[in-house]
Amino acid sequence: DEAIADCSACGSDGGAFGAGVLRCVSGAEICVGEVPAGTEVCDCEDNDCDGMVDEDGTPGICPGASRCVECQCASACEPSEFGPQCPTGTMPSEQPDGTCFCTRDLCDDATCAGQTVETGGTVQCAPDTAGVPTCVCRGPECTYPCNGVVCADGLVCNPSSGRCVENSCLSLGCPTGQVCDTASRACIPDPCLTAGCGSDEACRMGTCERSCATAMCADGEVCHAGVCSTDLCAAASCTGTEVCDPGTGDCVADMCGGVMCPDATSCDPVTGRCEVDPCIGLTCPSGQECVEGECQVHVEMPDAGTVRPDAGSIERDAGPGIDAFVDRDPNNRVLASGGGGCLCAVPGTSRSSSGRPSWPGPSWAALAALGLLLASRRRRR
Image (cartoon, rainbow, N blue to C red; front, top):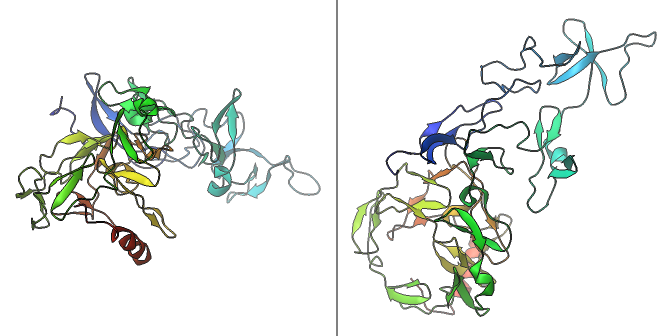
């Protein structure tokens, strides 16, 4: 199916909906990652994708005699000798046509993010709760991202993003103690939990190996699975549109320009093909993290969070209407999650002579600290 699903943009983008990307799912081309059109409701969003917002004439948009006013269904004020009166929790709002309606304050994003919403005794969204998304504003209402989202057959709503994604661990991730099997796209028990690796060893899908973070490779060598070997690209000098083929050391055209890859995969710049993210299934020792399939020293950016240069941690420019994000478990392993189904090469990034992306680094202070650390051992690559 490689030539069928080209990950081109599909669906509509704007208002309460969002575009997705075309994917081949169970033998059919489906728009994955979109927030589909729904029923028009009174929330200042174009829910039915007809180019109009909160059409007052839409059947059922507001119940009874209420009207759609200020992104909410509101009842008319009750006149009295003391002026217009409204129920507790609402206040009179005079409209340009002279009418008066009882309205409540609109949802505030920051306040909503700190709230908890339950339905039927189940927590649907809450702040800082594992496995539960943060609540979001929908007009005046604070609710959960998947509220009212209806997906096509074969897709499910991603609870974290509110987008329709493939129903597999590549899009939804796995519970603690499990890892995504990229072949079956199902969660399996994490074999590294029982592998018995040492505290300074890495574990790759149940196999213990030396960590490249502590490998003492000589100049002109590169580390793979804790073993040093000759780096054919060490002396390569490629142009901005070229990458170095690590198998030959030759400069070749970068084949990943504009290529969009499914969840948990990244584009090989030499072939242009989407390959499974090599960080999936790799557990690194404490203080290290997976970078391009190998354990490296974990670097902190002052005032800016953690430098995560692996493809799975991109949180910007991930394609049309796509929410790209990853989770990490306590073992510093990338967990496939989120997203609309495709990731692309990030605009504005360059690739090094070895064909690997060159990402924005930490501040000079962080680089200086890292330099002191690296000075204590020979260069690995």
